[in-house]
Every structure is written in structure tokens, then in C-alpha cells.
Image 1: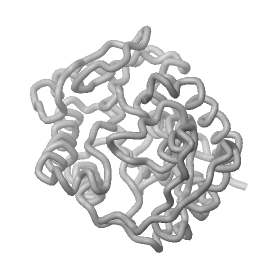
Image 2: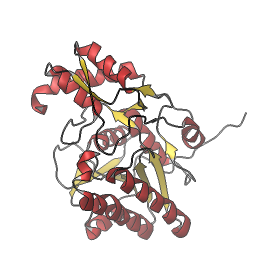
Image 3: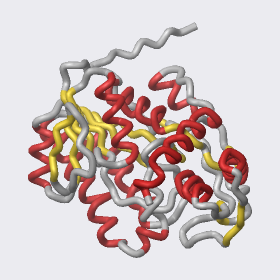
Image 4: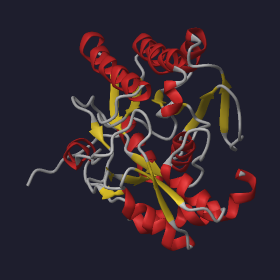
Length: 302
């Protein structure tokens, strides 16, 4: 038996920059960092919610000088900022390209310049839409920077992340969309026949994996999957939420840029190889926390 020992090269005296810190995953990452004693700087275009002990750096990721300054002042970066969505990015292809590729290159240039550790989040190679294309391109650039310039960028592949605080508009994510429609007394809308497999990961788990990837004392030579390895049919997830909230389900045609036969399932071997064993939050437990949160905050979300 080989015992793998991972050295934590970041410690609680370090300051971490979280781009997209006002977003859904960003909020969970910030909470995890604070819980581990880090100083945190949130980089985003506007402040939606102020968090105690978090410094807000208000700027656009496309502003090279602002990114340079923010990275210089921190010890490590978790880069989450970006434009997301399927049908949504089809309407804003040029802006999606500028933010997700050029904005990301601003981050990579800064971490190269100052020798800072960085974690970049990408997504499964399933869809063919502007969001997916730009994320894959930025992922390839991360490997190029590591190979050609010796940067320390670890790449984590996010999956179907769900949890407290996820917005249900303007970008339609199925978990909050299901829950909000059920709370409104409307049927849950499933695109296609619901047979597509999704690897649902509780946001707190994704946040922990991203932080561990930053703490890793080496540069991973492959993408680290943050999926649980358990692909669930979308109809099963819809049924779980419908049963919790007493709702019905209706089926709609697939949206542009998506496929009805998608299989989204993480490879847990990459996670174990680089970050060790990981215990994921069971779907039923995580979804109950999520549903309870939406029940509590429903009025302020509408």
C-alpha cells in the first residue's frame, strides 16, 4: 500500500483572490476559505452581497491592469469569473469570448508574471456552445502556460453543481429552476426525455475540491474531475424534487446547443490521484438542504 502525502503549501496566513466571488460557486468557495482561516479578496464587476472579512475588488476581468494588481496583492487565485449558460451565450458570443478567454488570459498572464498559484475551473467536454467552447479553449491555454512558462495552474472540472444560493435566472440551471417552479405551483420542465445522465455535486463539495487544488503542493498534469462518478438520469433528479415539493413534471424539446443523450459523469480516479479520497454529500441530503434554503428565501428571489 502506497501512502500519498500531499503538502499544504498554502496556510491560513495567506490571501486568496477569488474571481467571480459574487457568484454561486464563488460564494461557497469564499465560505470554505474563511472557514480554513484564509484572508479572501473577491474580484467581481459589482458587489451584490458583502461578506464580513472579505475585501471586495470591484473590476472587470477584461481589465488587464486591474487583474494584474489584484493578483499581485494575493498569494493564490481561484479563477471562477466567466459568462455561462447555453442558449444565453449563443446571444452574446463576442462578449462570452472576451470574458471567458481573454479575461482568463489576463489571469494567466498575471500569475505567470508574479509566480502565483492558480486554480481554473472548466467543464465536461459534452456540449458544443459558446460557453463550452470558451471554457475548453481556456483549459487548453492553462496547460500551455504550465508547459511553456512553468506556471502553477491546476485545472478542476466542475460538473452539475447545485446548492444554496444558486440563481434560477437569467441562466437556467435545472436544480433551482425545478425548485422555483415547484414552489410556484408549476410543473417541473425537463428538456428531452430525461434520460441524460448528470453528475450532481453539492456546492460545498466543489468548493472544498477547488481549495484543495490550490493547496496542492504540485501541478497536476491532467484535469482533476470534481464529479462523484455517479451519473443520475435527469428524470430521477426531477422526480426527487417533485416528490419533496408535491409537484408534477412536464417534458419539452431540447434547447439549442444541448444534446438529449448527454452523459455527464466524473472520473473519480483523477480526484483520488491528486487530492486523495473524497467523501461526497449524498444527493438526497444535499438536495434537502437546497430545497429548504429556497423555501426560506423564496420571496426575496422572485
